[in-house]
Length: 367
Image (cartoon, rainbow, N blue to C red; front, side, top):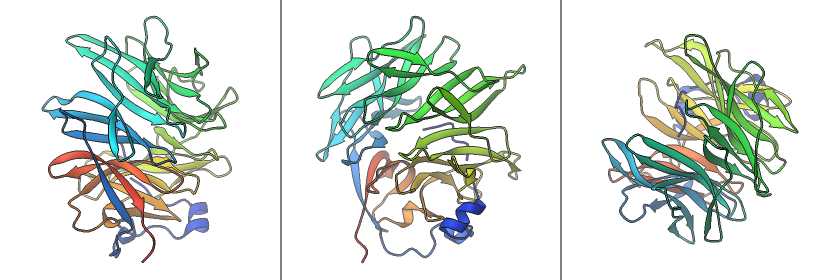
């Protein structure tokens, strides 16, 4: 997942179009008794005990990673494709021992990152998988690489990273890799999403003299960068983009919580209205991860006084806790909603029977 900086309210134009600002009970999805989604446990691959979903296409196919969890974190991670009701290990290339898939398109082309981590050695390489064939994408000498998203035209966006762990956003297409630059006044960049129009959502980065990092969300289109602004603070980051060029992510506000932490809100941005808050569960951090063509937004948020995260769906001006929209005795705690397709299916990660597993939520007909 992202850097997990989160929380929110409702912008004026959003309230006017989609409803009133959120009350705490609305933000928590209070009063929702009926299950609205069927949940599917995607399980994990052989010799792994956890999994997480990163993306879903309009066929309901899902990609992500499966891994073992140790006190050192995730180990032996392998990228997977979920289709036909089962997980498929995408595999590895020689010289790499781990992988993670980040995106797929409606042609079932999958992109992600191959990794090798042994001792002080650490290298990464962007990959493309299609029809059972795994290949690395072109890079530049001296840089690690990773692929973050692919559109239905086969255009791939990702990042190159130098030895100092600085990122440079790139576009992979027709066997070449091209840097797309960054915002004026910023030095580095990374990307999160690309739509079929070729619009790219990402984040520009810079370091000040004290070594502190500053980040700002951007839209890249036809060779031009557009600063998406913020919600009053210095920081914003883009995570999701739909076919209409509407972008979602997270941004700092001017407010702080009782512990002095900056309150970070989920945002929705479009070219007409700019950046606006879309609500939270009232905790310190909330971020939006993805948006579909119908302006349904998914993400994760903290609740007041808690450091735990809970998956949400935002639509028609209202943010709902997805844990209140699944069967009440399912045993699940949904922590991250990372992707939503145009059919309204949602993919993410949650806890079930003591393990972290990827899930698929499928909308059910109204009762």
